[in-house]
Length: 131
Image 1 (tube, one colour):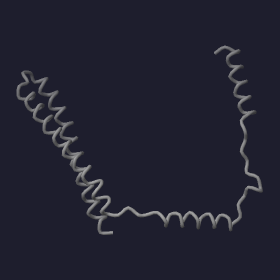
Image 2: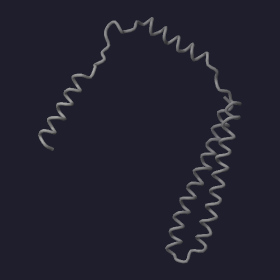
Image 3: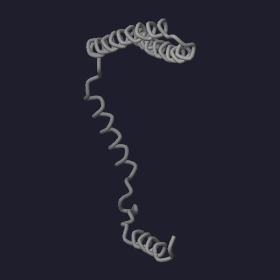
Image 4: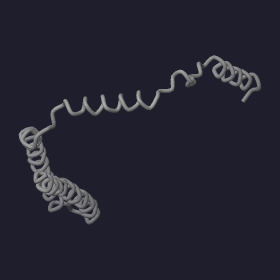
């Protein structure tokens, strides 16, 4: 790097450091214990005023979306499995079959992920609905 470029970069950094406003906490900005506790009480009171999401709201909102996503994923996986199975059955060389086997392993992993996520969701939902 040229010395002039190095000098310009260092000069810009020095100017930026000089002109960047520094925020400091002055002694007058420090809050007393009473002010902090009052703000904490206001925060808690504000939290108590909001409504809590009920179990029925979650069930009626999220469950249809989750079921639709799992059904869509299952449909896509069935179609992809059929296509890859036909390709594997009609493959003429062992190299093509080996390549398709690797792809089928990825498909099996994706099936496990989708239905595993559904199972985890069902377990957590059934466990948490009792609370």
